[in-house]
Length: 508
Image (cartoon, rainbow, N blue to C red; front, side, top):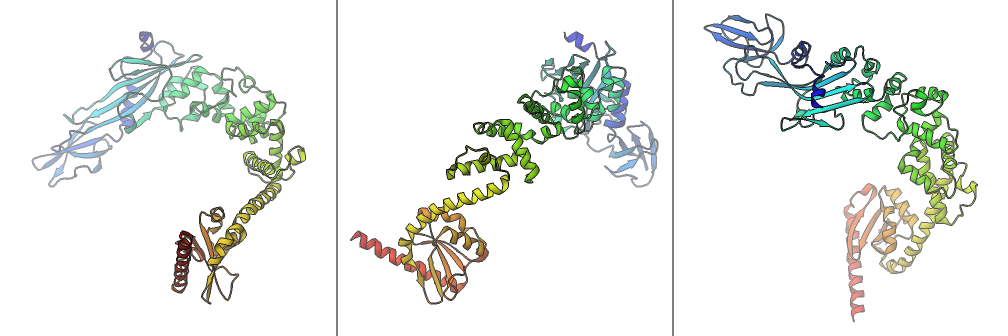
């Protein structure tokens, strides 16, 4: 089996590969080694392999300068002959495509580790190639791969992998792929028209693409019709939801839809993704004659996360009824997506349940203007919740009102309602409103501070726990001014004294 596999490949790197490595992959690997012969500075170019004098006198070039060879015109890096160059070894990975040596219709590729070693004698340095992985792409059958293991043995891989797994330091070495070698290799084969040029920029080596294209001829049709996003989803290993019949012989069979709908999807090809096709099939199977454009618009509803939310409400309506309603809300209520409308619809139904509103009427389940009704229902729920908190706060006031205090200029008293806390927060631009639940439960104590001359105008807010001051803030969370702080300190001492007297009375 291995013998049959390796028979597809030439025994030695081709001259075209050697030229590509020299002129492209190792274009920056050109050096001008310089030394002195008496007073004359000599130079040797590793590209044209010419030795020539640079001139008489002081050095013409410095070590690591960039210059142009006077013989061949190559841009070179200057290296002094006498400097150490133990690590002067340039390396690259090169993916090279060729026609099979066995079958002219088969395309092969090799992942080479290539290097040029200047650490020893720098004269006549050659490019060395070691194959690390080999690929065979047979049209109609797919790709197979063998890779060089750590042990030095060639091992088959179950699937074509775009990297030579096991290659040391592959991610630290630049990867080159000759697209001209691809063009020459696929010429005259079924892969010639696969549309591989479309994917060059995103998938440089194209190894997984040719595996896919040689396995599924529909890749050519999808690419030519503009459905490259569907192919990319497959190449990236993303979920395709079984929406594409990859072995189909016609586009109608590949996309599983009538010709007219194929043409309608073509108009949206730039944005169509597998979930769009999945959406089309899901709703068609449930009796909704959805258009391709609408199927794409409601595609996210078929994502498992949102689909579970829809299924949770199928006791109220069918999936199709829910989807049509959400689509209508997108068009009439300025929702930017059906999923956002779904979230608000879900909230609205929970609010109805919390308020005890029966969901037995379609008019209640599907309000004509979801956004307005959602906001109104949310306010009703908030009022109901505030009522509970206010009842708890009112029960606490009997305990906290005795701590109210004034020195004639300032007044401190406990906050009297949730509404007052939110108004306090809005006026002073801080977040005391979010402490309402803690205040109502007795977890903390909240006091408002006013000028005696303006008892209804927020000035500062104080949080206490027992007789300990937790925080005191004015507008935009500013710290208190000196006179304000002196009054608050007096208030805190007074609370501490009252609580201590109360403790002693209780103990006696």
